[in-house]
Image 1 (cartoon, rainbow, N blue to C red):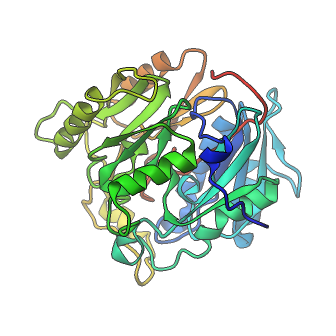
Image 2 (image 1 turned 135 degrees about the vertical axis):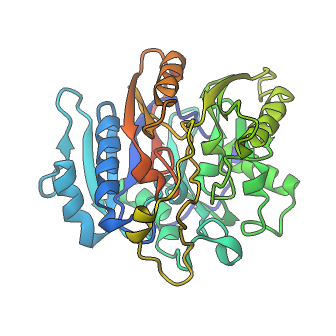
Length: 384
């Protein structure tokens, strides 16, 4: 596949908002024993539930390594080479055999951009396992770094070459009108693009994403091993509206991080000059932590980040996925689960809220938004 060497923004392409219409969603069937304990049995059940919720209103493209592709087909109801159709919707689940090092489709899949004519193209950033040799989470990520290009080739999308700029899809959020949300803790981390200044990183983001304004939040979710991706702390729900992970508990280490982000948001305007309306979304009341029993099920490779019993996981309800007809929301068996569902239902009228038990995804290091990557619909269409 021949890569496009131009700059998307200069060629009239920009990143849509995630609430705009989709062609479908990319996911990757979990396998890595250092991320998904006990043979990924419970993780695969959670991935299946997420895929089925999304497939109620859009196609799902489940990538799977050859040795687990049949397991994915069986679990998802795909027979042979055919796709599994969701009754009454026309949406389908497709299993595509493709190599990867783990299952974080948001971070290793292409970021898609679109022009005014409705043409969609992908961007292939460099991926280095969230920090490379400085603080990356595993030692080998070669297959992950090929996913974006290979997926675009498989589905016939032209793809921009953005290497050697290191970026993950979970580190950016777009409002579809020129505003990009990021965190300083992630994008300025020394394991990504240390040779670039903050101003140079911002220029690169705007030119590739067709943006006009970057809003820099200082931090993310406490103990987020991605150097605090923005998709765990703050997300656009519509132009001019964001949700922010929040706690009123001043003793919780998340309190100061969320307060710093709130101040940054309140001091900012978006690319259209609007003050952002911030909707507070509570984090789980009780911290979600790794147990001794969880720990027994992992098999860590040399050079791979390891879990520890008692380790606090970066649980956040902000890590949801917006599908064409729904919002897929993580649930942790916590008293704030229902509150999160209620708030998001109010913010997304007309969409069905799908609460999905997600602790077994969180144990891998991320959540529902992290394991999904939307593909914008082609053609000219209005924002939802």
